[in-house]
Image 1 (tube, rainbow, N blue to C red):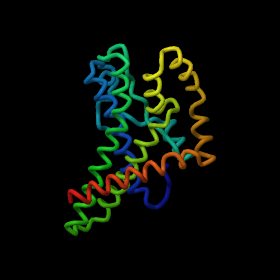
Image 2: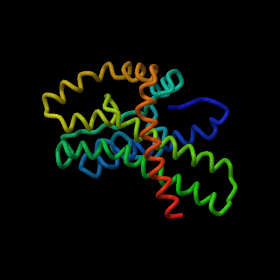
Image 3: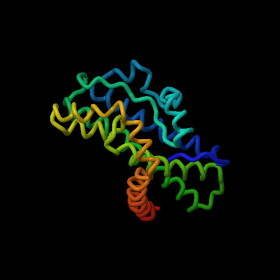
Image 4: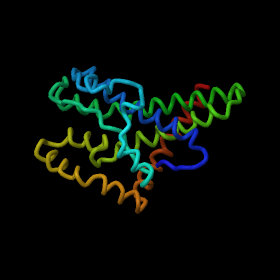
Length: 206
């Protein structure tokens, strides 16, 4: 999901943007729905430092797959009960998609008006790519990804509890799926499909 190379000067800002808007969206939605836990924990911020997880960064280096600190949310404080938790879980991927679309629009505007700035264009292009990948990757139904939280909110309580028991092994499952290439086979076709849709939208409006 994340490659290291000479273009790190572009990749790091793009990755931080995708990570930060994702976690901020979770925090903002939780606070909006009545749970002040993210604000108290200092997570209602667009400062990427507040969202970085040291272990997640190490895994990004070792396994090319990492994560941010999960936003603490007390589901009992949320309005609408389990539906509130569903909205919190969806907020991150949804915001990544919106951010990706904005980045693509900005890239298209720069190209349309022949504004040459390689640094900005490279960051915006990678911001587009990483936000698409964040949105799709986080919808995989393996804890602690958002897809797993969404599945848990949709399952009956007993089945949800059984499903959540795989959480201690989730990182090993993810790394294993990454190693055999299954993660890529899952997310890249979906990312490509969304890219076609977004590119068509931007071509229409610009």
